[in-house]
Length: 186
Ligand SMILES: Cc1cc2nc3c(=O)[nH]c(=O)nc-3n(C[C@H](O)[C@H](O)[C@H](O)COP(=O)(O)O)c2cc1C
Image (cartoon, rainbow, N blue to C red; front, side, top):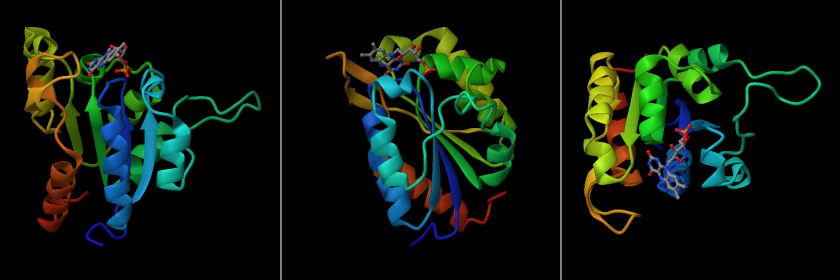
């Protein structure tokens, strides 16, 4: 249980690689982490909150407002709660929003509120990944101190081959464990 007592926000965006986040979630929980899933509205088109809630043992957060009773989710409290935030997979769109502070969903507001280290695993087609706009956003996010998990080269969901595959869940877990073992946690 190498992540016992660690509080992790698992941010999921609208990429075909969102299914990999379920594997990552399972690995995090098996290592003893408490995981709060935050998913974008587009992310829910790719993986259901029911799966994520069952695996994490917590309701999934996706919207600012709970229901019609006036309740709401506090991204500020979430940002303060976490020992680490993972944005896996991170779409081109979410990278752009994170780099530019476009806070139009609760994943981005949580990111902007987070006081802890943030790990980001981009996932997209190779041409989207190599586009200067994406590359600029990635370098801005690195400059801001985020930890970028470089995508792998290989077969992509589009059928093309190239760089853009989300880093494998096992490797993300090892990077997180290594990070905490170096006592760099917030
Ligand atoms: C089938 C399908 C797969 C997609 N996969 C990706 C992807 O891997 N990476 C990406 O950046 N966008 C992908 N998109 C586009 C995003 O879903 C879209 O840009 C969305 O607005 C992202 O929103 P979000 O970042 O707020 O989750 C995909 C769209 C479709 C229809």
